[in-house]
Image (tube, rainbow, N blue to C red; front, side, top):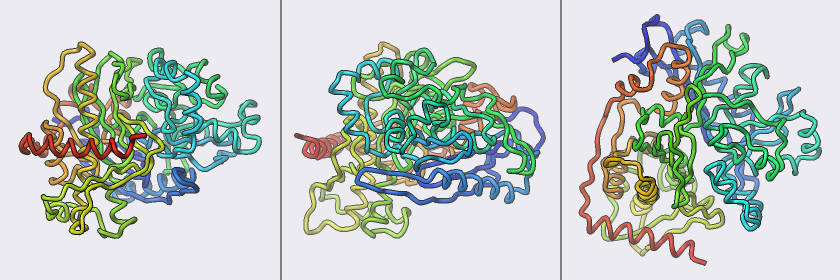
Length: 507
């Protein structure tokens, strides 16, 4: 089945996938195969321990370069593009001047922990229950709201300028949209708005009480639209003609769409710099008892679909650490053969809390550690520990999700985990994941599910992609990984992991 409605064979959908370490552009053909793709990395800035920043202009320039690259590769013109879909690293915060379009400070990245003390103070003052009730989130530096306040307070004159309506705030999608449209559109979608600590996910509106609590002027905020909506058109000088922008979703929500997880009970997990698992809970916003997040999975036609989400801060970043921090590997592909050669008698655990621990622990202050080292521990054991750390953290998320889902009273079947992202290409890692979560792991034929989700949303709004149910019929399995590890072995390994986390996080 071809997902596109009847259309000219030269019609493409352009997906912009702006991530934490690189920007990518992917051009999809009518059958959703990839016609062209380009990627460009950009610098990371670490001005202090636990601080992570990007130059906002680097995000824009790398996005523009990759878009031009895919058009050139395919020999396509603006008129060949039906629509653009944008997906982005979430929570990363940009504040810019409405007149000049220049950011007033580096973008503060989702991984950044500089507002941990503010979050702790607000929690101590008893504000977290209100925030969780309205937003589905917890008080953590991860989210955009406290980052906005930090910029307004630390950049001289920024708060006064914000009060006068001279500044604009956006997550990366809004920043790119502003640049693409030449400042004509200041908007976001419901999934990105839901990650700010400022958006009521039940009413679908910015929340005045939360704006007052975090001291964020309403004039800063973008308009919130559906994931598939009219987001304007590009400046004609950018691509030699205007291209409509029809879809926006945060990267994890876009991957949920790209994985066709449209039915309640479906779970996907994306393995990029971090790892993010989402469980579709339908029209019910399930309140977590295990410190997972209740969030918006997608919003179409004004109707919100909710999800439970678990966020792991370090997944692929653990492999990058092996390469860049330790020099054990030259590239990520070397991790798998090293892990396969590891001594099974050694039980080495890496708790990769380089920027704190995410769900279900939410400890911003703890830092990484390794346990179980011996004189015989070498590069192979380090590689295995890095890959297994991602699997263990996923197991923690799946356990918490299953518990919350069961307590909701909503019937559900045996979960199957759909996976994507760079690490999903590793057969070894995916088999170990299936073993440790004791459930099947499904890897799709189309691995670029985040970009595909963005492209689908844009195409859906343009009227050339089918309704979600028909799009789901086009999902194709590449390989299923069934658990094969003996229960005794799995339980022993999980017990060792939980003991390592306990020893690291204990007061």
